[in-house]
Image (cartoon, rainbow, N blue to C red; front, side):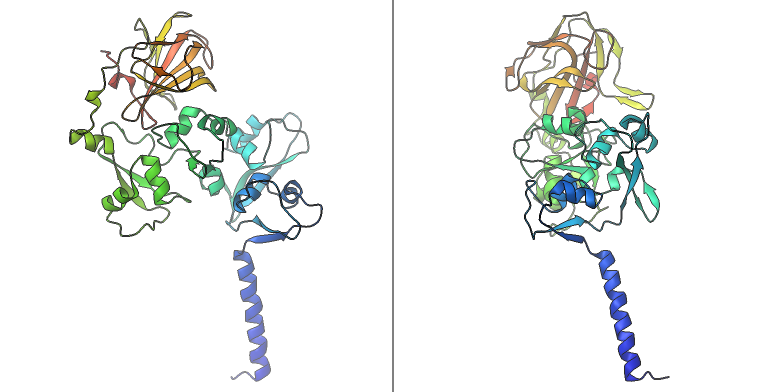
Length: 389
């Protein structure tokens, strides 16, 4: 049956309305700033937080002006899951119940501290199509990465996200402490971390995450964009989420070509005077112990195992007083639980120089040294470096 002119016009109108509705579902939600508005009020109105508004609108400060249009909701397909604080609640318990972390709750809710109050409503996760998403790595890019701002350091970033500095180094396979504004830092381990031994593998596989590009991946692995293109037979720079890229270990390649070899470094010495191992490198139940614990007495000297530069000397969660030295060939060594740190950031140290004294600071009850050996940020067995049987 043929439709008359009026029926055809009506059908076109219905189709237009339906099409517009689906477009609205796909579009970002825009808000026009009104007199008296500020980011805090807008964030509260749209159940988000200031950090999120600043990131999705690329704002460098909290300043906004009347008539300015800002995105208040990116259409990611994820919706926040809320929880109202009850008597006796704390962030640690709430995080445990919702399969997330305290630092993630603080980040999602733009909290200044871990203090919360009764009847306060907070975001405890995200859901998509009524399915709760517990894996914080796939919620959105904001939770995966930290974008470095002017004046920030690795130390300040690790404190902001309530994470260990060495974890931040490891997740990003950093070969040094140099970072720059605009650089993206992973806040969670990439899929290949811990699955390969950087010191002896010729290549690894990197699975592309949301928000990554070739520049970021090249920077993360200490290689060039041209190298990645060559290794993966790529003509351009386009990559897609889930794509697997071959990343070759330049240190091993150089070593095999006799250009840069670990043998050119002096043989490492022991970080303590007497060898008595309390705990080896490896799994402790469900957790990875990323170093070797050496027994010692209060105040015993701690030695630099190789010549290097002090890139960190301070306090870190779990490690207590800790020193990180940077050496040649992307090697770092870590000395934790010290009673006193005797060296400062930027200081050049010689091999077997006393850099600290044995203590029991951080998460420990006995006097000992926690020593780590890292290549491109990733923890290796210290027995591969130290002269130990």
